[in-house]
Image (cartoon, rainbow, N blue to C red; front, side, top):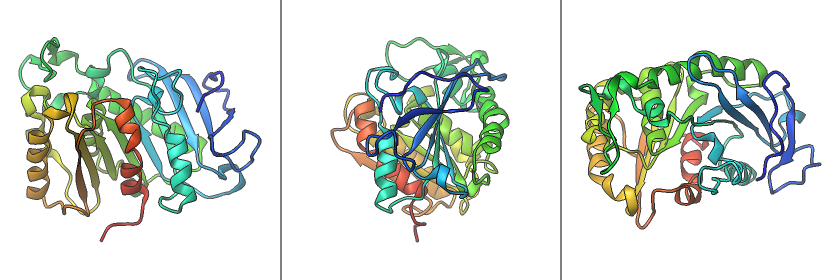
Length: 298
């Protein structure tokens, strides 16, 4: 879906565009509201896009919310880092129309030039430097990590504004967070640090090798008690994803030790041949959406 010109925060109007499955003139089509930029205080300002579900303007219903990282890659190929969008809007409309998920609001948060520093869980770091876990990439100073500030921005600034402006269901049972690669790490970190805010996380191709996989040790200590929180994990077998399986297996063991029930409280899926890129993530984005927004698993 191609977005039209962005809007400044404070001029709260919808972009005059709709999902591909409905013409722009359709009153029941999903629509996107853009804040470009959103005036963040805890971190540098960045664009935020809010996808409202079909029929939002014709109802008084309140909706669950999913906060998604790397928001520039979700809706518009011309804004995406590598020219490939996830087409989350089209996927959402298809799943809603099929009755497979609850209608929901998607909040896409643009990543900044300090993506690694914002997405790397600082409390999982050890020593003065953090290794990205990819050969040839420079280390980062632990002191420069600002994941806690990034999450504070989402929880203390953005969520309050979204809840005030749109008809949301505000509790953790209806508030989720979703990302890929380093975005998967920060999503799991968000639930661990703010279990009373987020009830679930979708973590696609989670970049576990950072810190030589030591981040798993943090999660085994910090995961919230099972029963009220859900986690979706997956990984491919090609390119960078080929590194992930042994680390994901360690994380699965940590989930079991913490009392999470496989297939109910959490799932881990492997996709043979899937690469570490937007095309692969877009192709399977329906699965985490169904896990978070579909009928409860028994």
